[in-house]
Length: 438
Image (tube, rainbow, N blue to C red; front, side):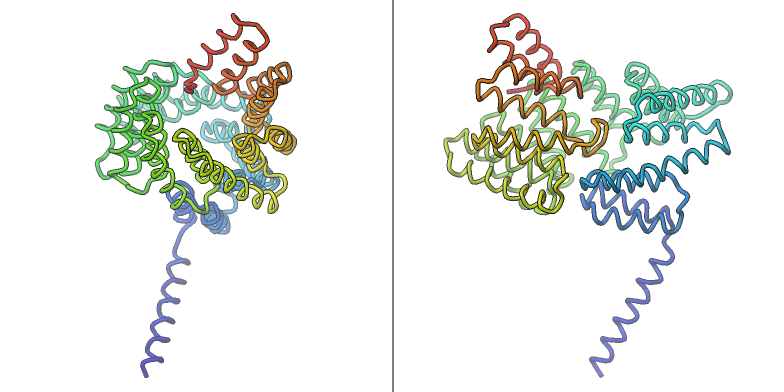
């Protein structure tokens, strides 16, 4: 009797779960996908949710774009490109019906960017700005339109205009006023205007609902990063600790805390915090990579060389497994190169960086590791005294991503090693402006 009762309960539960699944809309599944991606860091969960959403609304270009980006993060460029192209086709269909759909033009720009079609991407984004401007001029458009305008302006690298648009979004009571203020603080910090950036981050906290834990954590993490870049490490640590009060297991805040502790030479605490990230992010490649590197560096700083080597070896083993599963995972090859570099295996590191460069998709793809691989290759060549080759590697990295502070610093070291002191000092200054820290 008892067994039958349990079976009956299980059957009812399954029916209820099935009913709930059937009642979920494409929008519900999309939100679940975003939650899996950004809150749970589960790529598999996100992909399953977006697939469910697409089953219910297969003509939604945004869902296909979301799916493409998950594939990118998972290192599967081929599947990502298929989904990007589907998103592009659907967006073009929408624009044929309504050529003045600014949101569709903005989306088209992002898709083309991911497909390395940069000239067309810029044209699409400029068209989006044009249509948004018409909307703002022809009606009493609210803060939502100003927010969208700001986002497109950022993608066009028109940052001062973007800040102005975000300000308009706040003034006109956008529902995204808090996020607008958060982004303003980030943009001001990138420009080196740290005092203004900190004021903006405090305003962002005031504009963000106290129950919105995710956004409040984001503001505190950005504030901590600003303080770190402004060389105020004690205050930066306080900001990250405040973020961790909201969510003690947040890996972004834990990583930032670990790095700040290392900056303050509190290495034992730093090692403990990195270990927490490793334990919590056991199945998440990016977290494990950075945490094992950070832990190894902190162990080295305390003279525990054998334990540091063990951390780097652990990373190497993880990356070897990832490469076995997907031999064209450029990020795994780049991380393998970093592990080998930390172990002093410079020739092997160069081979891994070269492989990462070979299999990397275009530099604008999310899964591209090409600029980091070129910079890593430069570091290894520099260690081997191959200074001319190192200089060329750093040049390649900077050409792909001009804001790579590590590459600019490496370029400075290579130039000084070649006796070009003035040029080297200029490269060091560029690295410092881009936030490079030893």
